[in-house]
Length: 433
Ligand code: FAD
Image 1 (cartoon, rainbow, N blue to C red):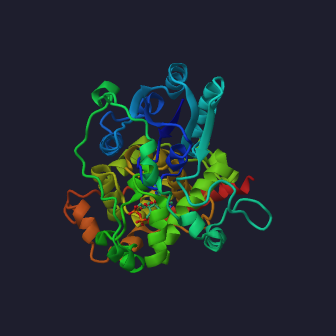
Image 2 (image 1 turned 90 degrees about the horizontal axis):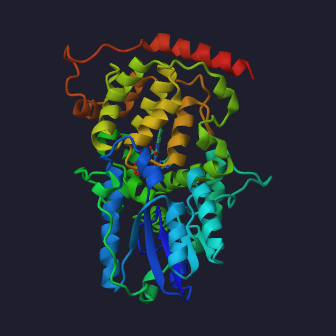
Image 3 (image 1 turned 60 degrees about the vertical axis):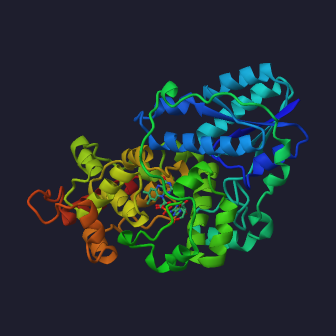
C-alpha cells in the first residue's frame, strides 16, 4: 500500500502542508504531478512561459527527490482519466493534496474523490496556499467579509505562531517511496514550447521590505517583490513569507492579506468566478464591445502614456506594476467603457502571476462592481496618476520610448468626454436596480 501526494500549485518540498501529512501517514509516499490537458488545451499561446515555469519547478523537485532516492511521477492528460488508471494500477491507501479554491479545481477534485472512493482510497485536502481559508475569518454575524479593512483587522487578531509556523517536512523525507523514476513527458509532447523569459527570484530581501511602504507605489523604482508567480505555483511558502512580512513591513503583510481576502471572496461568492459582477446591478451596464479600441488598449497604443507603458510592460515581460494595473484596468472599463471581462481575460493570458481570485478582484475593483470598490463616480485620471506616481516620466520613457515624437498616437478618447460618458452609462445601469 502507498500514499500519493498530488502536487498542483504547491511545487516545493519544504513547508508543504499536504506533503507533510502524507509523509506522516505511515505509507511510502509517491509524489505525483499531472499536466492537465483541460488547462493546457485552453491556453491561447502554445509558448506560454507559465508552463515553462512549472516544468522547471518540477525539474528542481525531481533533483531534490532523487537525492532522497525517490522521484516524482509526472503525467500528461485529463486528471480524471489518469486517476482512474492509477487507482486500478496501484494499491493506494490515501491521496493527499493541498486545497485549490478555484471553481474548476473544486469540481475536478470532487470528480477525483468519487473515482478513488470506489477503491476505498481516502482523499485528503489540506490548507496550504493561504493563511486563512474559506470561512475561517467571519464577521460578528458569521458571514464572510466583503470589505477589506475589517477583514484584515480580524485576520491580524486571529493570526499567531500556530498559523504561521512551517511544516517540517524534511524530517520525514525517508518516507518517500524509493524508486528509480520514470521519464517526464517533454514540453513538445504536450504541445508546448520552452520560453526564454527570465523568471523573478523567489527571495524577498529585508532591504526591499524595509523600503516597501515608501516606494511600492512608484513603478519606476521596481520596489515590489515580484513574488507573485512563486505564490501562484507554490514555489515559496506563504507562511514563511508572512512571517518575514510581520517582521519587516506591515504594508507588505497587508498585501498578502489582500491575497487571502480575494481567495475567500471567490470561495464564498463563487459567482464572481463565473463571469458575474460581485454586485449584480453592474451586470446591467451597456458596455461598448469595440474591438478596435480594445486592440489599441492591448497593444499599448491608446495615446495615454501611463496606460500604454503598463500594457507594453505586460506584453513584453508578463508583469505589470500594481499601480499601473489599477490605471490600465480602470481606463479600459471606465474611459473606453469596454466590458472589464475582456480585460480580465487578457491579463489572465499574459500575467505570469495570474491568479483567478486576485485578478478578478482587481478587475471588479477597477470597474466598480466588486467588493470594496470605490464609488463608480471616482474615475482615475491617467495623466494625473502619471504625474503623481511617475513624476519624472522614467517608467513611461522606458516602455514608450517614442513619447513626445510624432510616432506616438493621439489620445484614443478625450478624458473629459470619456468621464461624462462613463458616468451617464453607469448611472443608467444602476438606476435600473
Ligand atoms: P508585491 O507588491 O510585492 O506584493 C506581494 C504579493 O502580495 C503579491 O505577489 C501578491 O501575491 C499579493 N498581493 C499584492 N497585492 C495584491 C492584491 N491587490 N490582491 C491580491 N494579492 C495581492 N495579483 C496576482 O497575484 N495575480 C493577478 O492575476 C492579479 N491581477 C490583478 C489585476 C488587476 C486589475 C489589479 C488592479 C491587481 C491585480 N493583482 C493580481 C494584484 C497586484 O497587482 C499584484 O499582486 C502585484 O502587482 C504583483 O506584484 P508583486 O509580486 O511585485 O507584488
